[in-house]
Amino acid sequence: MSTGTTGREQPEAATETAERHLRADAQRNRERILEAATTLMANYGIDVPIDEIAQLAQVGVGTVYRNFPTKGALFEALLMARLRPLLVAARSAAAADDPGDAFVTFVRRLSDEFADFKALADAMAASGIDLSVAKNEISGDLIAAVTELLERAQQAGRIRPDVTISDVSAMMAGLGHTDSSFMDPPQRQRCVALVCDSLLVGARSVLPQGEPAAPPPPAGGWR
Amino acid sequence: MSTGTTGREQPEAATETAERHLRADAQRNRERILEAATTLMANYGIDVPIDEIAQLAQVGVGTVYRNFPTKGALFEALLMARLRPLLVAARSAAAADDPGDAFVTFVRRLSDEFADFKALADAMAASGIDLSVAKNEISGDLIAAVTELLERAQQAGRIRPDVTISDVSAMMAGLGHTDSSFMDPPQRQRCVALVCDSLLVGARSVLPQGEPAAPPPPAGGWR
DNA sequence: TGACAAACGGAACCATCGTTCCGTATAGTA
DNA sequence: TACTATACGGAACGATGGTTCCGTTTGTCA
Image (tube, rainbow over all chains, first blue to last red; front, side):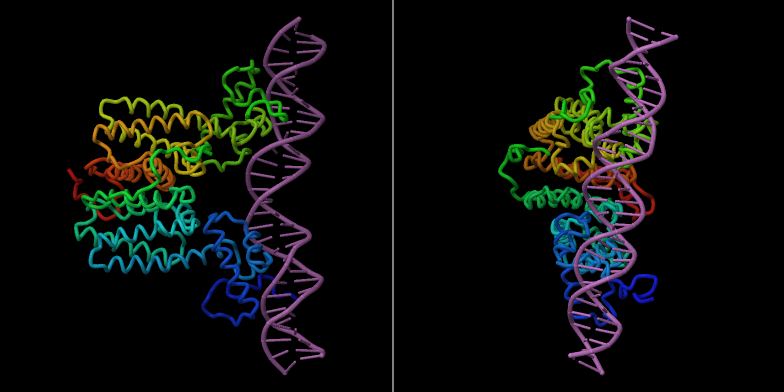
């Protein structure tokens, strides 16, 4: 009766297309929410409570749910925003003159993305070893692009011919899950280099300098 | 420490030493609990509810808590049981004639352990990139043993001299987190081989055959 | 066999978190 | 300025899961 219909009243969910003339404050809030969610999910992964996102965005939880029907929807919106440029990168890598180098560049880029946005690795873990982090089309396109990148690099003799896209996906997933929050950037780069070395033909990277030497993590060590 | 906190009345917690004359039924139940917890945590990781463990063990939750003051304690008990043989393996690998081969064998073994006991990978993720999955002594011993294994394999010229124990730990963690539940055994073996190839000097394994669907890699391995 | 400490089961408690509901506030408009 | 659709906040709800409590059962020993 008074308030909307029996169902929810969110406008077209998170669809950016058909921007149904949002009220100015609503538009502002939506952006705040996206920003807050990005910040928090980048650092803490998918596990941040909605309440915290709402708090950081200076908004009530209701407002979050008015914009995104579900936590998953919010997450997926963020994910897509991350995946899209990654797809562009993969495609241009596949078209590069030297697909071998382009492959390495792409892997490095992906690793950076994992580090910058922890939730991406979470999503990858949840959906198995392939790159299809969401049921969205983008993920399919992404894996297609990486497949082509791989094939071209193999044709160019730069990547081992016995390596499959599954191998690549699995290694990428592993990279993402070498819990980035515990790994400093130099260490991450070393891992990227090692992974690439395992896939490339006759490659033996110079590993970027990491921590001084010994393993002793600050006193207490484990935990 | 864990024992004798002010609160509960559990007998020495999970300490097997000083087996305080458990009543026959209590002993039986304790074993049932450990067995059930192993089964469930192996398949579902740390996230299995205590209730489910209790149910499978055919005991009440109270009985679980009488044996293990906390879910974490139960988990740690299982973990130690897993880590101990792994430690033995690492030590004997470090003492092997060919530390290069022994290293590969150990990595394979570790990977199997991840697959057999999903919770191990969970623990590793939670504790960062090093092997120290718990604050227990065993984990310290384990990383020490692996360090020695690494050094000996490097002295023998089998592992790249620029690889550090941190690198090894990180790659192992990645291996564990290439979510084993989504990866069939052949794929896992391929990843193990790739990781080893990245660490060893001049190695290019023949990757074990994986799934049939993917791009046919029968091109044969490298030497 | 009787008594009692030891052990048991599982309801209840508490905290967390996703989601919904609804009374209230306000941007946009006439 | 007044009116109303739109949007807001946040309390409340329901599900889940770890932990505690306590009345009841049972193994053990004399």
